Image 1 (cartoon, rainbow, N blue to C red):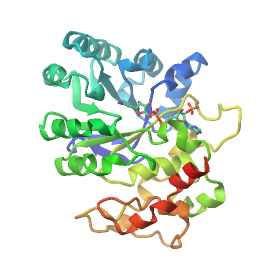
Image 2 (image 1 turned 180 degrees about the vertical axis):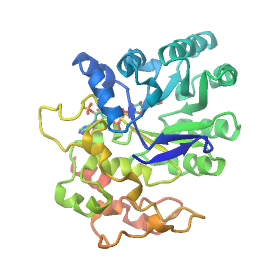
Image 3 (image 1 turned 90 degrees about the horizontal axis):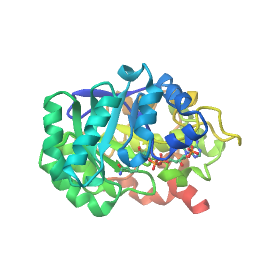
Image 4 (image 1 turned 30 degrees about the horizontal axis):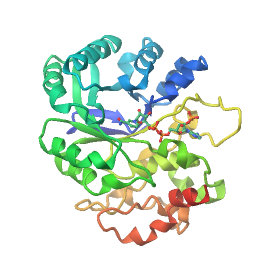
Length: 321
Ligand SMILES: NC(=O)c1ccc[n+]([C@@H]2O[C@H](COP(=O)([O-])OP(=O)(O)OC[C@H]3O[C@@H](n4cnc5c(N)ncnc54)[C@H](OP(=O)(O)O)[C@@H]3O)[C@@H](O)[C@H]2O)c1
């Protein structure tokens, strides 16, 4: 699994993490939350995102880590309008995760001015590693940008997938300029993008990059932007546990760790980033014209491939759905 530096190069994290919204409780209901987390860690997915908003997920995650806490990176959240309850949420999380939370985020920017001083003090005490903020809605991106510019946070978490690309306008460029960590939520569009996956023939051009499933392709879609550091997908299913056979591209599946994440030719549309060796087409691979390949060349900042967005496999999948 490739690592990237989160938050100004201070901390190295795996590029694929596991979200816990709704799905960890669903795994627990099936008696499989320990198996899910254990399989993920074994596959190299050593970053977990959770929140007090996710019901029992924080506690379930702590329970499932049982003895493996030091192998993983915990991204948790404060989610309350009350400063007092915010401090209580932090205390609970610190207790659950062995005395520290690696990244503590303010969930959906709720009362961020009230929580920041408390988080900064916790960072000074080394109970918190990095401080971040999240939001799922583009309506809040102006406020999120304001907080980013204030210099008080190390990382942001925002939605990014072929059907949801608003962060390309302000948030990603700003994060790149400021050197902030970026975690991508909803790489599968909350599951909408996985309902009608392209077939193996359509995915064939991606095979030289280690991508054999639609889920891998969607995760790589976001990670092909070097300003992003972690893709957070969620599933309730440990590898091989679905009744209906489906492409095995879940986080936690053995195949999720199979692709060489850093073999993906980084996008060529990043200003000031001349192509390096990794951006050359691997020897022996052909030049792809297939639509399933086009989406990797995700347009941003006026990239010449913008006109090809209609061919994005994600959008094609949406159109078929
Ligand atoms: N404001 C915030 O801070 C915020 C907001 C949203 C999300 N997040 C974080 O980001 C994480 C990811 O976002 P998300 O959970 O909304 O969406 P997501 O990861 O884009 O999609 C999750 C959905 O995809 C399905 N899925 C996963 N693998 C699949 C497969 N192989 N085939 C078919 N379906 C599959 C899952 O169902 P199965 O369980 O059946 O596999 C689940 O319904 C969250 O868990 C959370 O940690 C944060």
